[in-house]
Length: 526
Ligand SMILES: *Cc1c(COP(=O)(O)O)cnc(C)c1O
Image (cartoon, rainbow, N blue to C red; front, side, top):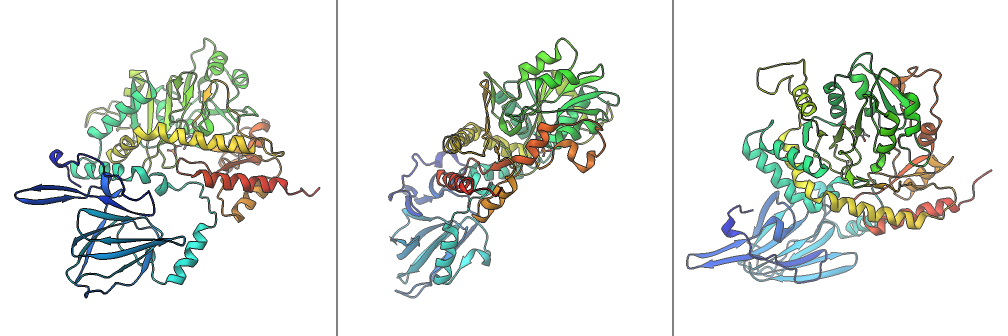
């Protein structure tokens, strides 16, 4: 909460009790002959950004305030004067704390019942809270709390919970947002340039250009190469719709190719067969965080003047041999949609490339066709990464490898425990790849929808990426007459994404494994 370098705490206070749902932390006290300065820092002491502060005083001697629980609010209690007793309980465990001075604070996790009582008549209790007041967050009846707690404890595995995913980054992200608010610059500015430089370095390329979203990153790159009407661009039939839409956006023709049965990735042999004199680019998709076979695709292209545009929207940080996805083709498009491995707090995207001319072209096209105000060299549009998102992404980028490593840990848990099940195809990884597990996609032939419902009944939220191949989408009806993409259709029919995200606990993944195992042991009706 203090920016002044002199006042930064000289050590991080260790919790006095073992890490638990309620714990005492030492505050920083700076004493001098002009008095005492007490510091409770969000990052080092409290562990959450403070959005509301209130205090209790004038409670009659020996009295209390009545018990209650908060479902999602985190709180920090500091007794500035006098004394008070706080009992915090969760899952039949109670912890009792007597706060007697301001040298330490009591930090309480969400989902706990608390009783505040035995106030001394002079007590002044300061409360720092992680969220604004909302009555929905309160449970004031103890029986109701016990029922709520029971319902919460019954396994419920979210597919993804962004609030939870970011919990250890929340302070850094909030600080970044506040810095942008204070800066007064809300388009362009140093935060965008900083993130672009950081992300380019992370990917191992010379340039990154922030744009509005992943679809724009794809389309602006094609436009930057001058791909347009009369040109063909090869895309896989099994991908998110944006890969194909980007080609339509520039007026070119998406040419679909089927995918590898084992991985769902673009099949280089089919790319070779799809090349015509009009082919200007190929867009391999690193689907599910698994790198596509770039060397194979490059070989298929041979010496022709055909660009490779990686759709890296699901592969931030993945490695193909010793290089990152994003550094493999002539350019790569990233999305920072909130659920991606590196996600913003809204839409965002980037084009990365070693080609300075393409980087400048993309920047121009996304900035009204010019690099300077009121100078418009080409017919451009408006597609920029805003500094708020750039600052958030810069705050999160240092944790990307750690979050990806956690995803890999959870993926290994699935792979080890689901390996021998009949009726389930597990994701395959090429020997050249170090994937980032954007999605853990299994296939359950003929029973996918049944498995989805079975998991839902156990409060496990699976997902489907994607329920239809590109040519099966209504918007593309009739576009590829007489062509078939049976492997892509097989994926659309059988694929199921199991919950896997950096914030999942091992216990949650084990609950999913148990449920999938139970499902597959149910005999199938003939
Ligand atoms: C998310 C995604 C996109 C599009 O990104 P947006 O930022 O949502 O426009 C493109 N391709 C793939 C493979 C994606 O997963």
